[in-house]
Amino acid sequence: MFGDIWERSGLSKRDRSLITVAMLTALYRHEQLPGHVNRALDNGVTKEELVEVITHATFYSGWPTGVQGAAIATKVFESRGL
Image (cartoon, rainbow, N blue to C red):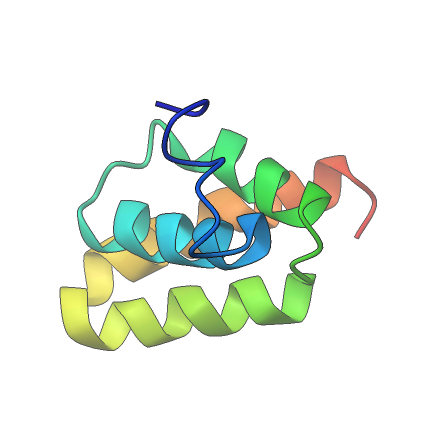
């Protein structure tokens, strides 16, 4: 998937990361979220942007998904010294 989907030219990797973090948060796929938060940071997404995308997703997907997504992102930020 990463070779086929992530390398398509229609979206930047940065944009794909934002979309993926939002989708994983909204769909409660939190086991995959730490890796994608790290990938997003590596792809140029800022901590502040990730907080915003998780907050935005929360209002569409529900409080439990957003709270869990925010907790996971916070652990990733802390592990990276952010």
